[in-house]
Length: 476
Image (tube, rainbow, N blue to C red; front, top):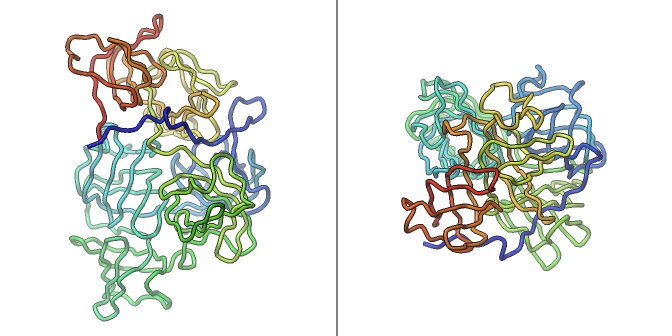
């Protein structure tokens, strides 16, 4: 076992943020013209994707391949594909497309107390991180992700490498048990056996003996399979080639912007790399502008946004924005003392936290997530959790703001989860918050600089001190 590293000692390689007029919010990204934008929905005015507010008043919406409807079907955390134009701050969406990666049954889970970890469903290994939006609104009572029973039917949107590895941006519970309804999954075909009429998607076996496959299906083709689940096998009622059979997001010569993870490295030199992002091939070379970091940061799992022009099936990157890695995110919970929508900030545990146009807003108190934003919060009343990191300018930057029920009857109840910055006898500092650990019931708790701690307690705004009542050190 090893203790988690101290990110402050290593220095943070964070994205550089630029001001967006007088709104106090922060914008990033942009294709600079007509093209394709693919990323998660972080909030609504019209539609915020990759830090850009897209006007959808005249958009055509396509849900799971079916044209029709309006924006009402879009939810925070969904990964959408937009055809339109933008300048990095605002844009106009001509077409908005949403399709989940799969809908299927939960077969195993390893979820920590902070509701992050790994799920396995429909043969896909699903990573759940701090920014994953979780929706259990169809259930009669709230059920934490860690307590969902195996067999629960879930719908997952996110970033996939096509080979069965997914970062979930949104998980929606459909039912607590499987009733034989049609399920679906998208991935790259492997182990195609035309004799026994089977193939594999991720680690899920697909039996297509009841149907005829469309022409062109071979190993490596991206497909959607629909059918009913029996044990570890999906008995297909329909198999279709999806998105042209590959993970290419746009046509030759089109501008494109893609949010996701580095899912593979094909070649790399000191100043260039041919990588895959969500399975899409991306060329980064000496002409690529990095808003922070450089080619050496393009390691497997690195979150980023990449913009450029398609050259055949390769996206030639004009710019790369590195996102904060999961291990550097910290969390504060409690009731904010101040909210300033104009400045784009909130104050929680006496810490000023900045939000941006990429900050995810999730409301667990209402099903109407499209109206929830910074202006919705009532200081002194609403209980929130904020996932954040320390940006290069020293400001705490929110990646996600979530409103929920206060788990305690005490309005001072709060939580700090993050790295210890200082230790002084019976006090420690984490996420800039001073924490008193002198309670006799906490004897034996002796964190050192760099430990990642999770601490619950009562916060006194006058002194700025959190009196700890429950503590733990996160040891991996």
